[in-house]
Image (tube, rainbow, N blue to C red):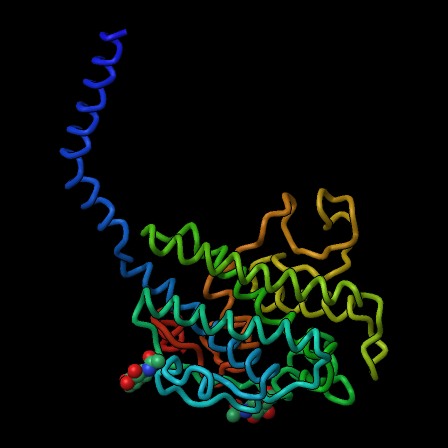
Length: 309
Ligand SMILES: *[C@@H]1O[C@H](CO)[C@@H](O)[C@H](O)[C@H]1NC(C)=O
Ligand SMILES: *[C@@H]1O[C@H](CO)[C@@H](O)[C@H](O)[C@H]1NC(C)=O
């Protein structure tokens, strides 16, 4: 009994001594792991482009004012977005979108706490900009032009266009990150972005068979077309799926309802920054800006491609 206590005591003391000796090593290791490398900084700054867009679209859509009013410092003096405005939304949609809006403001702060970041890029969030996406998705002009701000259904469809792209970017960035700090931040951002995508998809899924007026095209068809367009622009195969798919594309290849998109193992698809630029520029080419970013996106990765054009 006494021997066993003293053995335990010795073990504890030995462990403590070992810990003390190891402190400088583990502290150094932790510090090292917590410094984002140059490559991590680039990968963390890139998503600011999408977070700025989402913050402005959701803030204006739900509250009728943007970052210049809600968190002016976060713009770092970047130009105000073009054509964004308050959307006509029912109370539930407005409430959800306002929550998303403030979440995006938090994401901007979180990223800027970790890396220097850059000013808000010029964003084209005009109705015409979204109408162009929809026309490209259908391969013909919708008449009258699609207006994201006209009602909650249109706004939800327009919202389907963006957070999902951000989410695939975080999935794609994750395996390339080196520091623990960067991985923790990206996991946190990915969790909430994919939550937003899930909420948007669930709200749309409830209305999947409803016709979007005056086009007479179902909500499901809109999502399928938008997803197909993103697959086409990304030039990297199938990484995007609408709300109703051939069963072979559904979970386990067995179900057509597709409230969440995923690969054959129901894992989230990942995209590279280049694939994302091709999609958000609407050009299918990371060197040719346009679409939501008339002057291109910012940060080292996006700028490196603009230079080659
Ligand atoms: C915003 O920036 C100004 C000027 O740099 C500074 O004085 C102010 O404290 C900042 N406000 C916040 C909320 O960070
Ligand atoms: C915004 O996008 C629309 C539609 O593509 C375009 O007609 C308009 O010129 C764009 N505005 C700017 C300033 O780029």
